[in-house]
Length: 114
Image 1 (tube, rainbow, N blue to C red):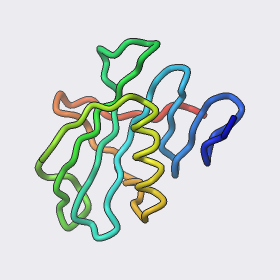
Image 2 (cartoon, one colour):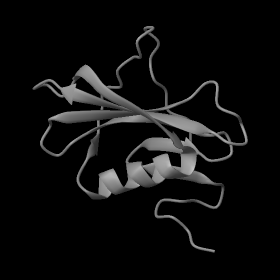
Image 3 (tube, rainbow, N blue to C red):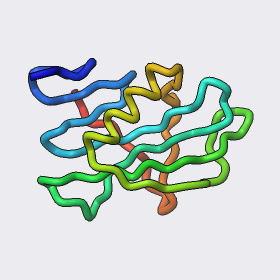
Image 4 (cartoon, helix red, strand yellow):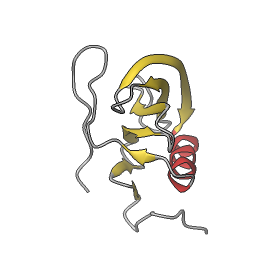
């Protein structure tokens, strides 16, 4: 059995302070491209099944201050594919945004306690 980079024995994956608990199926947070042109938001599909969790991955243009300005695309990925994408992005130089922006209904993103 292979272990992903960042995996712990409890099934919790940690990517540069973004967290995902594979047992609960959550991945929440924002990444910004190395050039600062794009932001990606990873967040759970609240209607996803517990046994087959899906993650929304939203692509946004970024303002000069790093905040998202306009959503360009939304993808829906299975949790394992979203984890792989997030990990590869971090390996390619993407960074976690320290400010976690709220979603369209005004609620703030959260990170699972690890």
